[in-house]
Image (cartoon, rainbow, N blue to C red; front, side, top):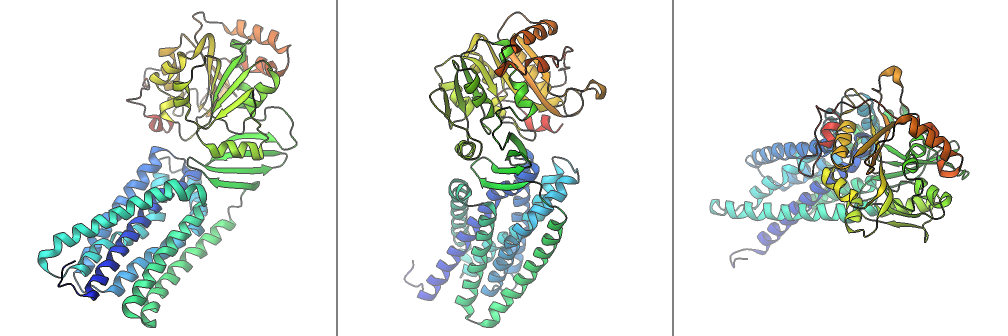
Length: 519
């Protein structure tokens, strides 16, 4: 600090640096938590992130321009406080708005691209524009001489960026796993309102100034709360939510409905069990996934990528006593929820690791007779679990007679079939035999309905015909237990080849899974 700088000027400079730092932190925290606001309704695809990033960048562009224009007229601290206060009020009302508005947008069938873009605009454009005005306005308040404009602007934008870095890390690494989305959003809005009030009181120390801030904030809050409450009345939730938490990867919810308990990740139902503990596989696709045992009836070691509620690994542990089962689940919170609400109990025969499936396979020294890939969602697929490179790594860990069983959501043909056909095409590059078992195939509609499709990839060089598989399934079903469901699933084997000329082979370099899912 120069010896010519007065204590008042130094305090003013520090106050403005703190202001831009906090504003930058809140802005990026809002963008990170925005993904969790949108995910339950629009998924977690690249379209959601593209919508968020484009809207925040648009808002910042407008805010920078507007903030510079405002500062050229008559820069005052009361105006800066007002800009921050309105942004805070717009953020505070978000929890009353986004559930009902998101449901309305999601039900309007605007498409996988337009829906999250519209929601991002409605929720984040206004507060981000006002936050964008803060840095250029603060620069004008800080400038004391024309020759210092460059240095002042550089310093303040650097401080704002440091705040953005902290906001990003703090929200992603700490707040989301600890607090709910609503609590984070309320905290961000309250932080801005408190900051605005402190600026107002610290600079003017006047009740009039607080009224100038408070009246617009109150109006914005009331305008937000009323429509939100009205909309929510028309959209009652089904079932009873007994648990909800944001993890690093999902919005996890447990919902009781009738005699069943369901596990949701964002908006996708992942698993279900009967509350009274009936030891049967509840969902049709989980029963169909046991088709892997038709190809490897004497399997002794299995790997399951994606835990869900743990129904499949527990079924194999309980009914195939000689089998060792390993589970790779990327989200440790999912493991805890499965244990707490779904009776999942790992032991010496059934082991679970909180690790990414591909990394687990890469580091595994074991060979597997059965591998189940159940980490795919209807609206989003981890692309690194779909590529030729991944399947080659996996094939190296599968025994000679072993199989890889994938649960894929898609149609057999038509506009919703691109992802399924691309994955089958990719599997055929690595595995000699690939079998497709639609879970609820209805030939009358030509297979254009989106559904669970079980795809079995085998290292066996000899292909089994449908009559051979059906005969084998009837023979094995006499054993009962895990073989009970084989007959019904084997009869769904698709005998016609899927057209694949118009879909790509997926690689680590090129795997446009989001575009294929929403073709």
